[in-house]
Structures are given as structure tokens and as C-alpha cells.
Image (cartoon, rainbow, N blue to C red; front, side, top):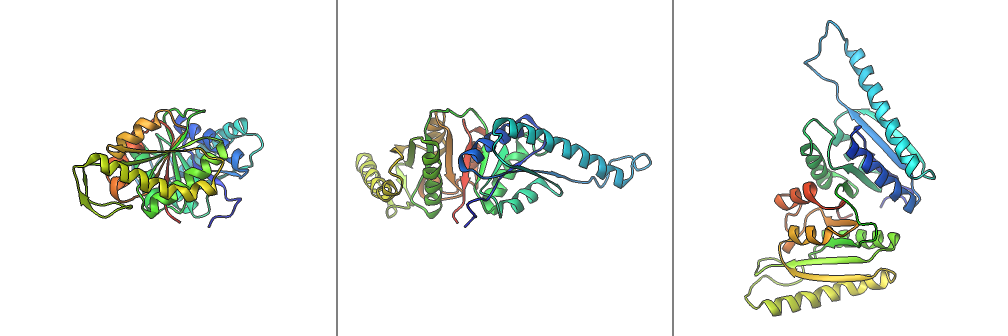
Length: 291
């Protein structure tokens, strides 16, 4: 378990997307009253630079100077957004994914923008988000789209331990923000696996939906007692998870998913569904691993 004062960490690369992530994280730090840690990674080139003109040390010094400038710009943006938040910076010579995974060991959250962190726009962020979801030790937030300030927090659940971790994170977030929580569970005509019920093949759609609603309501009962201040809105839909979460996320502050799951969310962060959410979510996306 992370310390209550564990910082929120943001990967900084000088892009506008990273600055959006910094301001989002600064607001979150102010809510939780925790420090903000800004990190930047650079990699020394092994070829492709004119050795006659520049030495290895000069290349390193130039990259460090650029990195410090990016961190100073990000720190200024964070202080302008939340002056009360303590801000620290870290410059490291390594890959950005390696640095963020290491930082996640002591972080409350790791936050990245939806573009940047490499030369291929979008692709690097997607691979970094998936690597953090698979190997990181904290939730990861990809700041993208347009968050609805007065909208709900939305979480996708399926009854697996991973989705329970996502639900706990979403409830804490909704409580901290004074926002309602929409809990989305999906089902399809052919149900091969479920965290709530035995495998089955069925055409009785009305009965399936009624069963899923009942099971979800039972599962949420305990959470209602723990978070009485959060208005819970359970939603059971016959749809694919990515489509449902994209639809409900269009008017949300944040969408929360587990790092993988069973049933409707099986393999969520291992294939096309994960990529769709990381690249196309209409608002910030939080990916939560079980403790």
C-alpha cells in the first residue's frame, strides 16, 4: 500500500499534451493534498550525430539542458494551476517507459498526455500506457479528450478482482470530487465467461439482463455503505465494452477501467479494446491494477 503522501508523477516531454497532463495532475494533487513530481527522460544517441563537431559529453549536456527547460516549463504550469502544491522535478538518462515504471513504485498515480513521449505521435503514448498497465505499480491516467467538469465518473466492471480495484478507485475519485459514479457492466448474447455467473449460452435476453442487474446491485450494496456520499448509477447494457464506455465517457469527468478482466472486459488492455480507449477515449482514462 502506498503512503498517504505518495506523489502524483507526470511524464514531461515538452509537448502541449504533456502540459495538459501536468495541469490535470496539479488539480488532482490539490484535491488529495499530495506533492507533484515531474519527470523527464532522455536517451543518448549511439549513432547519427557528427562526432567531429560534438562529443558525447556535449550531446549529454545539450540534452540535459533541453530536459531542464521542459521541466521548468511544466513546473511553472503546475504552480500556476495549483500554487499550494509542492512540485519537484527529476531528469534521468533512460527510456521514458522505464523511468515511469520505476516511478510508479512509489507514486499514487502516474499521469501522461495523449501524445508525445517519442517521435511517433500517439503510438509511443499508447505503448507506454499499456506497459505501465502491465508492469507499473500504480494506476496510470492518460489525459485526453475533454473532461465534463460537472459530469460523472464512469467505471467499467465485470466482477473480476481487477474490476473491483477499478471500482474502488472510481468510488474514491467520485467521493473526492463530489461527483456521481456511473457503473457500467456489459453483456452479450453469447456469454462464455462471467465474473458473476456460470458460463452459459442463452437467447433469453430479458432474463440475462435481469440477472445481471440483480447481481450488480448485490455487489454494489457493500460499496454503498463504504461511500454513502457517492450517488451510484448502475448501468447494465447489451453492448461491447468499448462502445459503452465511449458513449458514457462522452459526458464524464473520467473513465476508469481495470488492467484486464473477465467476461465483457476480458483482455481489455491486451488488444483492440485497450487501444481504442487509450487512443480514442473522449475524456481522461484511468487504468487500474489490483494491489
